[in-house]
Length: 178
Image (cartoon, rainbow, N blue to C red; front, side, top):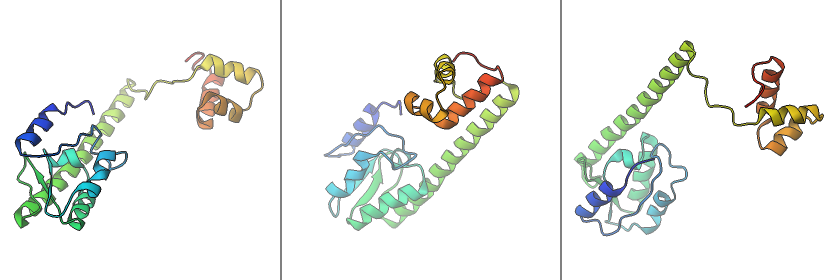
């Protein structure tokens, strides 16, 4: 999500897009994509939604199919500036389907490689996950005052599971401060 939209905006403007909408969200999910969700409201029959690349729109075949189905319902199409995709033609639609499959495949491969890297790092003892973001001293003090895990969790804004896990670590002497 640290991407710069300038190059994409330039490409879309050069492609003749009269309206350019901006959204810097991951294409991995349709959730929290407020700009994308407005497309069915403003696109008209015969119009084309233009993106620079399919993976800028969505990264799962399911999500891409949902978007294209919404466009079809409105009588609109999808096209890209960097790939030969134009769903107004049979060849463009077939290429769209192939690119969607590859985008999803690439996302799944990336996820697998990340999981393998984390597993290898854990085996080497160099990966311990996200650092704790709770104050263990405060937690100890609250336990000392006789508060229950539920009270502590509610007041500190953390889950009870986190409280229990921290209590176990404290009782085994692993961590005195966080």
